[in-house]
Image (cartoon, rainbow, N blue to C red; front, side, top):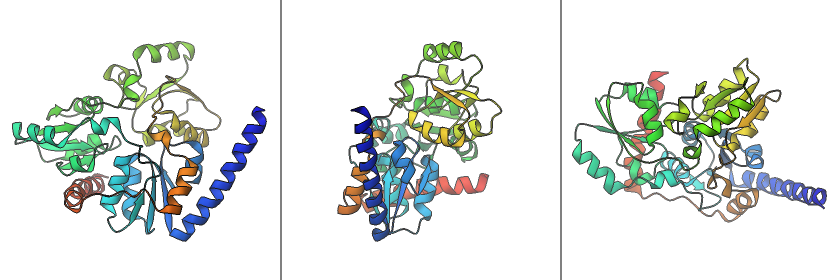
Length: 316
């Protein structure tokens, strides 16, 4: 029975993929997918990346329609950077609890308390918060953005764990918001210690959204793209992975002869996983749901995103 069910699922996925390819061509659409998406979505993506890579691609694509397989703030960023394009998100429920932990009212209050500070917002924020921000950053370029920003005081939102990690590499005063990623923040020292005991030859690669005491245990600390690159190029062949489990698809593609052990079975983002092939086909067919950002918000938020892309170009 299980084999039959798997065969039916494979056939259904094949039909959906064919439908998606047809609709994509008709709509002149591009599918952008985050590394945390389901494997079958990563397989059909025109571009696969982390938050920074996806933001770059959203700005430069010549497609008329962007299907963003990620979470809502990512779709907003794509719309802000490409206001003349139609941006679709397969499931509107794909939110980000961390992004919801910072609000405009609270941020404005903090800005008033520290008038000499400039706001650096992790890209995992809403368009409204980006509109109150001097420059955005991602986990891949956060250290460089902080280092090169023309300010001695920084208001950092919303991820306290990434903020703590970045603060270790600067003498600038950082006022750090108390937000966190529900998925990465669950990983504990005990989880990692247990895996290290079970796999003593494995290197621990970890995302800086994890707790500081967990990040301190890392043999390599970096963004999703950084982790992929490190594992691909490393001479080691065993790794304990401290980030969302969707990255296993790409790790396996890049390094099929290496072994990967996820540090916890709870490293799964439920918001990333709400998207599926059926919903992608439906959104291309109906052209809904679309991402909308009010023009006055988009104009202000665009400055912070464009500034991030400009910073990156200048410091490379």
